[in-house]
Image (cartoon, rainbow, N blue to C red; front, side, top):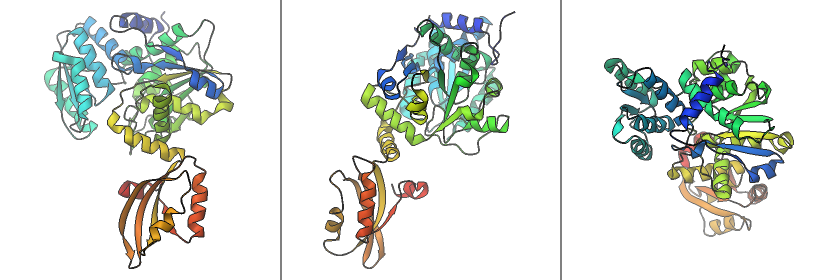
Length: 424
């Protein structure tokens, strides 16, 4: 009898999918990263799914779904998906490979860059329909289209064939690690759960359950909340910054595969900490990562050298579809998280020389990045929004002390989310 993993897929099935997948792309590399390994005194391996043809692992599940559906006689049906990101691009690539028609539903608000890339991958075999302002409206339109036309919906994660396809990541890791090397930790990003459920199922006889670490963005803790509740739950509020992992509800099949893990194994990463990883990997390693793709590497800093030293760690880097128009925002968030940029509202007297007196309070490594007059709060005083960058976070302690010694009215709004969103 074929062994079946908790995700409902067999290892033999995953290996078969892996072999079939070679007709469209070679295995993505598993690379020892010297920079990270030196920092943490560990062997840090990165599984580079950002180097797939569509720059994410999503092509794997899509290929496996199509392969099996076509073998079962669905060649003449129209395939349908709803996505504004990596799933759409993988779907489009596979439609062109199998030369089958596909319809991609995307929200009207989808960035043009993502629309263009999806169209490029699919070519003449796909049609893109922009419907709704949010994903839920787009998804509902896709479902209605399937019902009315008899099309075949290709889900992003909650499907056994999709899970089996994503599990080929794990099968490749086993093949690529040096002989006799077993990971002490495997760090997996989680969105809908297809990658994590497939990977843990395939590796269950290789890696002990307690040696898996799952990571989600703080603003989308679907798996963690579901594990705490003991059942899949739908998040009432979602931060979409980490768009590749911001899922309101983990898949039912995926949760069934992951429900035996502890909620303590799910580490939530602040969105701004993820930005630090993106900028560092770009500046130091020349590696372009999307926010979801940076999740597993961000966990390393949270664990720290003390917990990682001497270990063999595999981080699955899930994708690199990064829109460089987001880079200024990512840099801003990274600097604020690192503590080298702060925003203050100052109450300056309206008299000659007041600004010069303030400038004299700045240290040699302090730089004004933003200066904006807001309004007068009284006849003799004015409110100023000022952004200050410095070389070292400790410099701000001295600056604030000089503010207070000078009797300068100020408020640090860097971490005041409501106020910062209004004026920054």
